[in-house]
Picture 1 (cartoon, rainbow, N blue to C red):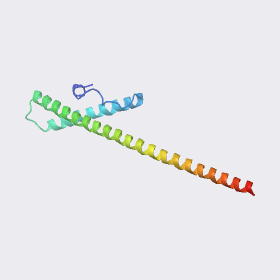
Picture 2 (picture 1 turned 120 degrees about the horizontal axis):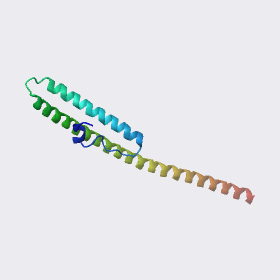
Picture 3 (picture 1 turned 120 degrees about the vertical axis):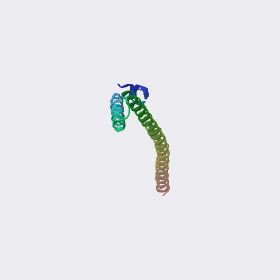
Picture 4 (picture 1 turned 135 degrees about the horizontal axis):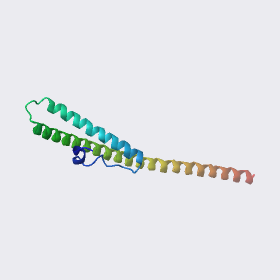
Amino acid sequence: MTDAGRRAGGGHPPEAGGDLGNEVEGYLLWRARITEAEQRAREFTGRMDWLTTGQRDEVERHYVDDSLRRARQDLERIAARCVSLRDEYERRYRGLRVRCVGWAVAVCGGAAFVATALTAVSLSR
C-alpha cells in the first residue's frame, strides 16, 4: 500500500458487512482509486516543468491526499444514502405486510362469516 493510501485513512473504505467477498471487492476498488489518484497527480505535475523533484513529490502527495479524501467522503455519503434507502424500504415493506395480513384476515373472517351464515340458514330450513 502506498503512503497516500495509508494517509487517506486506510487501505479501503469501511465495510458495511463482514462478507469476505465484499471486503475483497472493496479493497480492490479502493486500490484502483489510489492508483488512479496517483496517475492523475503525475499527469497534473507533468505539465509543470519548473517544479523541482521535491516540489513535484509534495504537489503529487497533496493531490493524492485530496483526491482520496474526496473519494472517501463520496463513498461515505453513498453508504449513508444506502442505509437510509434500506430503512425506508424496510419501513414500507413492514407497512405493506401489515396491510396484506390485515386484508387476508378480513377476507378469511368474511368468508368464515358467510359460511357460518349459510350453514345456519340451511340448518334452519
